[in-house]
Length: 352
Image 1 (cartoon, one colour):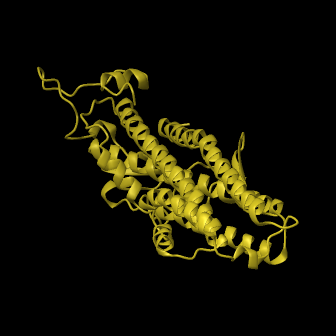
Image 2: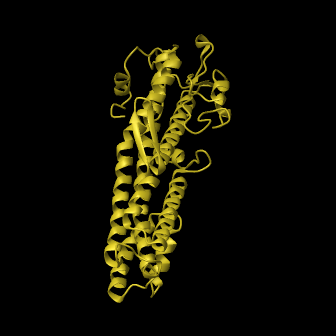
Image 3: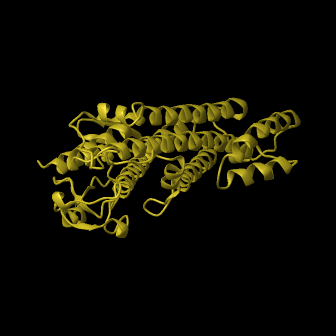
C-alpha cells in the first residue's frame, strides 16, 4: 500500500471512529425521548381512560379550568424551546397560547412535540460537535501528512471558527444539518399524531403506542462490520456520518490550499462495498480550485468512504510560496521524521 493510500485508510478510520464514538450519546437521547413520550401517553390514559381505552370524543373534550391553567404554565416552558427551533413548533406554541379553548388531544400533542424539540436540539448539538471535531482533527492530520511526505515545513494558521461554521452551514446531499433533523422531527411528530388518532378511534390500549414508537425509533448497533440499524436512530446516525464525511473532505481541501498545492487525487476504498462512481473516480486528479463536491470531489454519495490525497507528480520540482525558510540561511527547512503528537507539539497543537 502506498503512503497516500495508507493515509486515506487512516483518514476514513478516524472519521468513522469519531462518528461511532458519538453513537452512545445519540442512542441515549433517543431512549430518553422515547421514555418521556411513553410516560406522557400513559399519564393521559391514566387521567381519561375508561377500561384502558380513550375514545376520540373523550380525547377531543376541552380541558377544564384547572387543566387549562396547568397547560398554560407548560406553554411558558415550551416557548423557551420554540425560540431555539426552526419549523412549525414556534408558530404552534404561539397560537395555542392565545386560545381560550384547548382540547385534551391538543395538549397531549403539544407535550409530545416539546419532547421531540428537545430531541432535535440534542441531536443538532451532537452533530455539530462531532462534525467540528472531525474537521479540526483531519485538517491538522492532513497538514502533518503533507509535511512528512514532501519533507518541507509549512507555515499555516490554526483552524478558525468561521471555517467550521461554513462547513456546518453548507448543505450536504442537498440539505443542511438543521433542516434535515427538523424534517425527521416533523415526520416523527406526524407518525405520533397518526398513531394516537388510530388508537382513540379503535379503542386500543396505551401499550400499543409504546410498541409503535419503538418500531419508529428503531435501533443502531456498532459491530465489527460497522454500524447497522433501523428507524429514526439509524437516520440520525447516517446524517452524522455524511456530515462528518463532508467535513473531513473539506478539511483536506483547506489543508491543500494552505500548503499551496495545485492538484488533488481521488483515492477510493476498493472493496465490495465501493460504489461504481467511486471506482471510476479512483486515481483521477483535478485542480484544487476546480473541486466540486459530488462531481469531482468526495463525498460522491450517501455513506461515501472515498477520500483524496495531494497530487505531486514530481516532488523534486515541488514549489510553494508557503514553504518555511531558515531565517539565517534563507534555505527551505526540511522536516524531520516524527510522530503526529511530536509534530503537533512543535506547532502548538498538542491539545488538538
